[in-house]
Image (cartoon, rainbow, N blue to C red):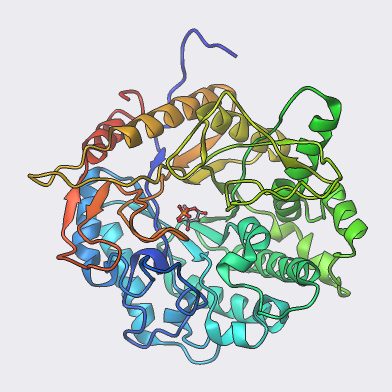
Amino acid sequence: MYYKKLKDFRSDFLWGASTSAYQVEGAWNEDGKGLSVMDMGHHPEGLADFKVTSDHYHHYKEDIALLAELGLKAYRFSIAWTRIFPEGTGKINEKGLEFYKNLIDEILKYGMEPIVTQYHFDLPYALHQKGGWSNRATIDAYVDYVKVLYDNFGDRVKYWLTINEQNMMILHGAALGIVAPGTENIEKEIYQQNHHMLLAQAKAITLYHEMKLPGKIGPAPNITTIYPETCNPDDVIAAMNWTSIRNWLYLDMCVFGRYNSIAWSYLEERGWTPNIEDGDMAILGAPLAKPDFIAFNYYSTATVAASRNDGSDKAAGADQQIVSGEEGVYRQGENPSLKLTSFGWTVDPTGFRSTLREINDRYNLPLLVTENGLGEYDKLEEGDIVNDDYRIDYLRDHIEQARLAVNDGVDLLGYCPWSAIDLVSTHQGFGKRYGFIYVNREENDLKDMRRIKKKSFGWYNKVIGSNGTDL
Ligand code: BG6
């Protein structure tokens, strides 16, 4: 659709930026923090681990002042469950609460809106050792944990996100260490874990609504449009298969309180359906479990084709954005219209618009973009200069499409690119940078951790100042 005159982003648009605790905070074992699965995970050799990261724990005042200077209206960060409950449950660590209290106060001091993710990949290791999400006790531990967050921060935090990218944890769980090594019938176990996470989320949303706190809450999966490689109807069915399994399985449950029927048939066919206990569906479908908005992360689109059914569907080198393929369901397809980033992810701003439209059409809820951005090997030049024009281009193109989506009728609450400041990538260390602020360290050399504004910093500041009209 073409528009002669464009509508503006809403006047209270949440221009933000995002981080997550284990990727930015460091201080992995300080002030009583317990270990998480990310602390105990395997790191590719030579790449940064999650122990020091950007040392935001010790630099938070300086960092928040910089984010205020950037002009942010909102800052999305996650709370490390292991700072609040070192063992995942049991005794509260007051020092952990204090850190987030100070962080939230600092954000509010500058008039920014804190957007809080309750759980971003870093399950307490103590819970993992007791079965993690395979164990229904983890559901109760999660609800107890979020109750502490609501009790302590519910008056000041107006935007809550439950679980970051549950769909990516399920589809790439091994990479995030959520399945115990040696688990038999891994997929069945993973979908059982998924069921428990869905229950935990429904309970967390219900509790939030029951407490009548003055804010909103929603899920934060990674959602993207899936294209069929051709107009061959079999490719179209393959794209629909992968869309239901990758996207709607998670959001249909969160919004409608039911399993997506196509995804469910897929699970049945493979013998991977979870065990559903009496009362589970009532929890999942409770009126108060419905989210107030949908947050989602978007980086790139996927293109798929019909399965060849000859054992050749599984592609190598898949990650959370690169599709792998599955016998009888779909296989990776080519998309000659799209370029790739240095890390092999498609760059597809128009796909961002279509993703926004698809979610809007299906759920008719306000949307919040909680991640979008470009990971690159930024270079620090002499005089503390980082010319990240490629990032400016990427973000500009996506914001343009977001504005078109607003014209299409999407109720868009805000846009929070990944990442506010350089941090450790989930799988690719510190060399893959996303921030508006450069952190002066290398993979294994911590240097002076100096904060340096990149070229994109000044550009984004101008974008925010013009409410997205001066790109
Ligand atoms: C999302 C995650 O999957 O993508 C972030 O929520 C992650 O934690 C981001 O960092 C970018 O992915 P990566 O692998 O480049 O760090």
